[in-house]
Image (cartoon, rainbow, N blue to C red; front, side, top):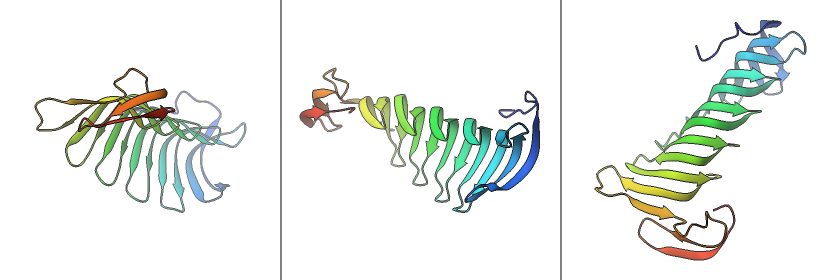
Length: 173
């Protein structure tokens, strides 16, 4: 199993309906500090649901967060933030996969759109740095992003999928 509490001692399976202001937690709790620790499920009044590993009362480790609007993220969390390898599936059909830092696709990643378009390459804080762009039936992908080697920092040129260029001062893409 992705989730295993067998490695933890001093935990107890409980329902906490007063630990979170707007949610109910069901799962393992540390007997030392009475905070969620290990695998659990947190159901928010908003309709959002987190199922996964907890530590210190926060999402820490592997888990799945399902939003009331139909969006779903499955992957790693660090102190509530989507951080690490994961997949974010939007209710509109768009899928982001790769490495996330603080909820943003950062580093190597891929975005697949309902239309069939795909972006794959390097991202920074959810922004394109340098990617290949194609539709599922295209013969050749098109390279887009900061092709000038700037990485989206300082005076740079961004090239879009149609070959248009945008020159200016950029910060973090």
